[in-house]
Length: 370
Image 1 (cartoon, rainbow, N blue to C red):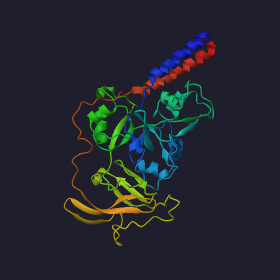
Image 2 (cartoon, helix red, strand yellow; image 1 turned 45 degrees about the vertical axis):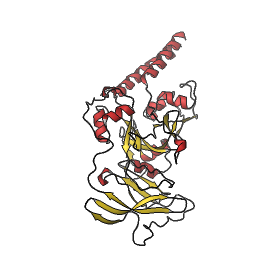
Image 3 (cartoon, helix red, strand yellow; image 1 turned 180 degrees about the vertical axis):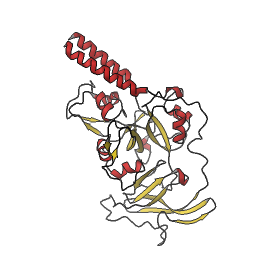
Image 4 (cartoon, rainbow, N blue to C red; image 1 turned 90 degrees about the vertical axis):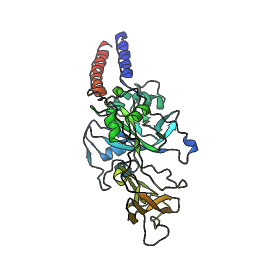
């Protein structure tokens, strides 16, 4: 029995060494802002085939169209659409700052099932390491991360941030690093710079990048005309995504192809507010012929259009806006030449499989010696 205890202790020490924190820095004092939360995204890379409905259920995303919007899927996409193993999908959720780090506001709650042998099993095989087992243990105040019971409820604190980056409001995205990727490649793909990524993630140099690491990537949000008194202010819609707002009566899309100008129009959904039987009229400046999303004039590099400017419990507001449609001068910080370093091709992924094999052997040995 004494040998078994020693081996179990070695096994748990190995687990602690094998797992690193994915916590993001979040110092924004949300109590002084209009809203106490912000929009965030994080990658989920399932180990096995699944479907969108199962992903929505696992992360407890209330509205299916929020999942579609975060991934720019058609609003006609079926919940039963298959998501192949290892295909990443962005999970939308609300973030709040707490004790210098960001955590999902009202995090998804997981119910422990038969076969869940400890928190490490849940973090690795169910949630694909978007959080560490230590973070789950700390958040749920569990003294022993390996003593869980079937039916127990565990809150899953997804890492996030609400902070500005270089003085600009952004949508923070927890990007799971692919094997063979690099800091420079990720920066170029998502419109930021290697220097910003390194600073944001507390990395001394690009060689510290690891495969399967959850990297804090700031996504540029489109410029909008939403005023500070609106219930959805600030409306931050990340490049390559769309969201429904104003009680689902308005659909707003952000794309670099539109020069990072927020494109909003009346949605095809029914209003989510019980006080609205139908969506309010969205005439621009009281006119009867001009509606939200309509372009009035377009000359040279400028266009005037009917833009969304916010909503209250009673009304949806619009305004005439003029925006430049000339090519943008570059996304959030111009990418600079910086020596990228490939993420380890085996990285933590191979390390975890080796760890799993060793763990199984140690567990069997423990039972034999006991």
